[in-house]
Image 1 (cartoon, rainbow, N blue to C red):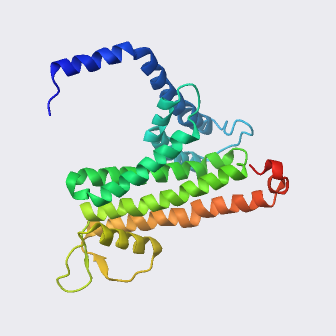
Image 2: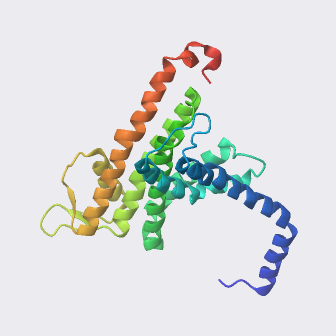
Length: 261
């Protein structure tokens, strides 16, 4: 549907009338990107991170830490600052961001054929977004002072939701570009969202029932990518949160009721 000249003028007039407020919100997004990512990246390469207790990072650490920070700087999650230009985004907006992705992936899984390859690109972006976020927590945020117990519980819950998102996102990819077939002569490829979700869940859990198998190298590559992603979660992300929660439960924060939250 084409936009008429009158409608376009109305949009331009609205932008002009609200430009001061819009520019303030846009600057808030830029400030979030700069303070949480660019400045941290510069501090790490100058061995001035974390600011509270600077430490020297090896060249390998700097190389491994840089891509997650760059990825987080490009993440759509930075847009939450647009809705809270006066300071750091409220938890409400971060929660909404996560819920939008959860329900968005459910919709993609159910109606993947309606938008074709675009559904695969959206799912792939979300997987990379989650990996970037979790790597930043493990490699960068973990260097700052320890989290409180409430923050750990919240982050652990987010990680479990992220893991669910990854299962759904890979199911979308299997449906869109993968060639997963029944493990029998002349087996048909999976076409239903439930079958794709089942195969993605089985792959994540490494159950290996064998009812479906990847038929070509592209599909095998997607399976390998999912396996490496789950390794990151099960052997790095989740153990890190559990370990920190156990430390907090045994510390003063848990023993003194007033400091639990």
